[in-house]
Amino acid sequence: MPQMSQVLRERAIGMLIAGMSTRAVARELNVHFSTISRLQRHFREFGSTSNRPQHRRPRVTTPAQDLHIQHVHLQDRLRPATRTAAETIGLHNHRISAQTVRNRCREAHLHARRPHRGLDLTPVRRRNRLEWANAHMRWRLARWRGVVFTDESRFILFRADGRQRVWRHVGKQFSDVNVVDRVAHGGGGVMVWAGICYGRRTQVHFIDGILNAQRYRDEILGPIVVLYIQQHHLMLQHDNARPYVARICTQFLEAENIPVLAWPAYSLDMSPIEHVWDALDRRIRQRVPVPANIQQLCTAIEEEWTNSPQATIDNLINSMRRRCVALHEANGGHTRY
Image (cartoon, rainbow, N blue to C red; front, side, top):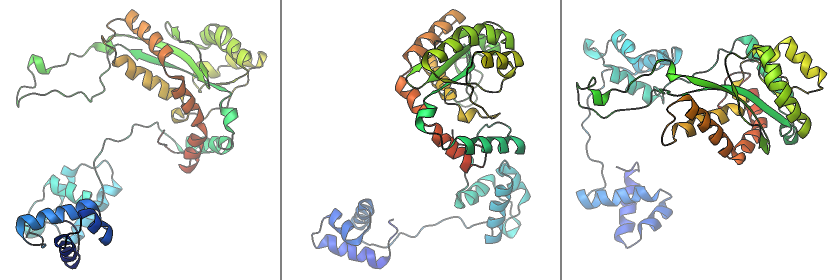
């Protein structure tokens, strides 16, 4: 039933009987159109503007217990409802259910959701991230557009994200039609390196085996990065992976006069190329047919990388100042990026 006072309900019904339209009554009483519509249907069905009596189960917890339940779940965000229910005695010495605990939490707008999987941000890492945000949040858009963001990512053939569901009957979970085969180690995969910047991107480079500092210098920095940056007058960004910050790589970049953007550790949320990798992986999973071997996977990566919209990449580059502001407001903590 609409949440309106009895006087307001009777006044609305009077206006409707007098011939006013539903929208006109809603405007006159400054209420939503759907509220007046529900009130009109209720009056036609029951001939009254009063709410029907509602018969609900009596509450088994006191107001003090309600506050206690909400408090303990605010103090321990990972606490299961079953544990709180087992430790709480309701009115008349009755046990309460886990659903009762969930209902009391929902009354305080607390809902059980999957936690966000974030990196371990120690106080030192948070401080370093905050200092970096303060130093770069006033950068103009033109400076961010002059940075090439590079990274490597691993793509595997078969990935289980835990979101797939199967329609089945009760007790039939082990039937062949209800079982999804799991491939050991994802069926194999490839490591890919690439870079993005405003208006353009590098080609993908497949890394065979383990990438150490010498291979990073000889296979990526020398033949790809240096030429690309000198041609387009850019600044290099790469994270703090050990091969990237090794002495032979830093000395090589200094000798080639390649400017490098300082980067805080554990800051995947600040790198726009991480979103490009995620979108690329989703497009590969949506291909028909899905890649079934390593060669098909490599072909799919090259094709989808080439077909990635440049406008999407440009929007990610343009978001760098907003990312810095969000990191500053989070005091170096986790951000929505």
